Image 1 (spheres, rainbow, N blue to C red):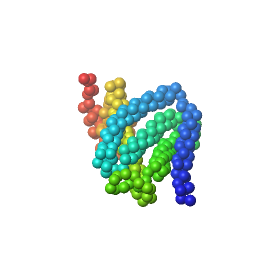
Image 2 (image 1 turned 60 degrees about the horizontal axis):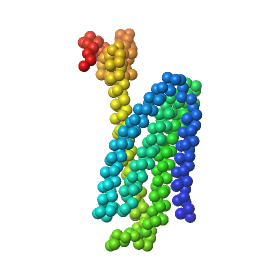
Image 3 (image 1 turned 30 degrees about the vertical axis):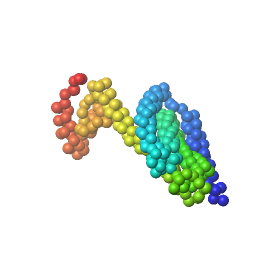
Image 4 (image 1 turned 60 degrees about the vertical axis):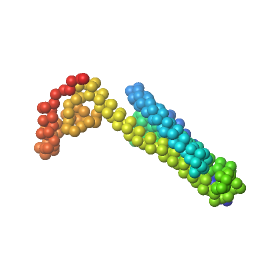
Length: 275
């Protein structure tokens, strides 16, 4: 009975992947909006895919080094079971595959969700939540699928390990579970390593995009260079400064401390000459 219940795990993983595929196809049926929205979405997808290619290139080098270390520990020093390097690789691969599907879905869904929200709130939320669910379902589905494959494969092909000869002998349930557990934990380690790079690299990438947009406005249009306190975001350039100044002049209480500093920064400001 217990062995039969274990088959619910791969079934659940396939069910999650099936729903992820369904939600993705439904999202792709929605309109992407106007030509301008399509053009912006295309640029966003191009930048996102360029980021992923660069990140995966670096992550591949890191995984090769770590896998070589695990292989030395397993096959030279024999202090790890021989399946650990392969589990580490598959964990990183499925984690990276989840990130690719999530990024692809998000960049296709952004313009579609914005366009759907123009018609109704329900339509916009439907596109947004279903596209966001794709990433979560893919992560869960691929993770459970890989663990299920490793569990059933190792449970079928390995026996207990003889400590004296380091050879497989007749199957012993307790020793078998130890090998399976250490192998699946290594799978989780590989997935977490890839996720760490995705999280840190994603933060750096978005910050670089903010700085790039800021520099584009600085160098592309001199009218957007009026300083406004300690701002660096492109969204507060020019129009935000002027709105804050008008509000400060109109209200006798709002911005009493901000107004003198703002006036001084405008009075002392001289346009920066290009290098």
